[in-house]
Length: 123
Image 1 (spheres, rainbow, N blue to C red):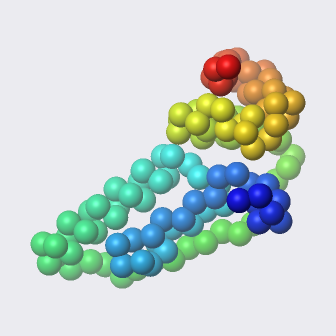
Image 2: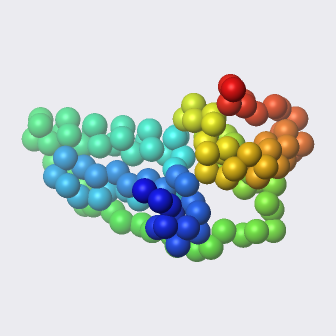
């Protein structure tokens, strides 16, 4: 838990895997998005209900994107980062993962671009 793997992977603090009840990875992403995870979990519930009711399922799909992020709009990256953390109610995560100084820059960018103040950790 010293962060070695995280550093090797580019310091992305929020990757996610969803594993179904059979142990199969059904979703993975380098960056978690609460809305997307909610959609995936909703589909898993629907699939489980249909299996239980013996309703036929369609053919499985697999899609993966492994393209690098475009860094010509770093402001949008800051907005996306803050929105994901705040939607998940992980208000202190920028400070935890990035340090106070970098988190302050991220929050300042978010406020400049959106005109909204991000929620800061208490304390």
